[in-house]
Length: 165
Image (cartoon, rainbow, N blue to C red; front, top):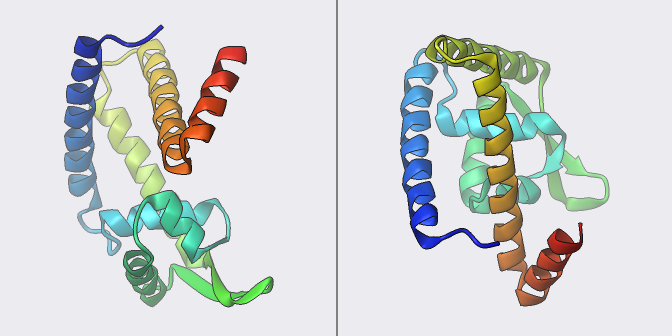
């Protein structure tokens, strides 16, 4: 069961509008924080677990030099640290410092409070349903993008798994 072209076009418009709205909220939300929006995004991914910089760049969809600059800035702020990867001395592992963990908690708490304020007229059920649909959309887009970059055989396999599963 495929999505009709008009519906897909409307989803594209709505996603674009959502991206702009989220960007506006993020910009207004990041005022007064030493880590800008891009750095906050990197900080969140680093906070999930210690990782190689190359893996972080791939997950964030940025080039290694761009990520390297962000990590250097976060390191200067004392929010992350790097260490050699014990499995490959040429690679580096990036992790949050204690200060970085505290800053990430502060940023996320601030974002939650802001969103609660902005959605004060929403019901709990509306928020839960929206979170569920956005999660499904994100997962579908992420899986499709990964399958597309992996090549046609992966796309076919993934579609078969979705049909069977």
